[in-house]
Length: 105
Ligand code: HEC
Image (tube, rainbow, N blue to C red; front, side):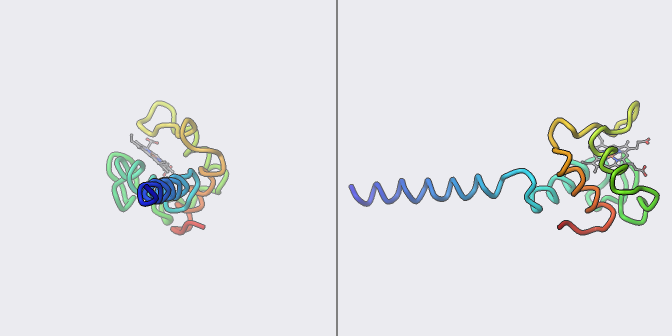
């Protein structure tokens, strides 16, 4: 009986810690999103595919605010979709920083 209770408690603990790791805004999650979701069009290494090269050298003409708006609102009448439905403004800003600097803080 005690063993069963302990097993249940342990499972709950694992589930809770997984849920915390999945929280939006965690750097690992944003990097994953950029590699997978943005990568599906811009290429896994972001050097271009259906969408253009979005590595730091290619985005020098953007400042962080403009770039976060491109991420949030997309580019109308092109395949670049708006991400506002799934990203907060803070997340978009961190992605913009990541794209410009190649690093996520
Ligand atoms: C469905 C395909 C698709 C997905 C997914 C996608 N993009 Fe794009 N993206 C495009 C296309 C196509 C363009 C070029 C639009 C144009 O013709 O101006 C573009 C343009 C851009 C630009 C502007 C590049 C420049 O040189 O002006 C940025 C920045 C960008 N995307 C970032 C992202 C980010 C960040 C993500 C993920 C959050 C993402 N994209 C996901 C298709 C996509």
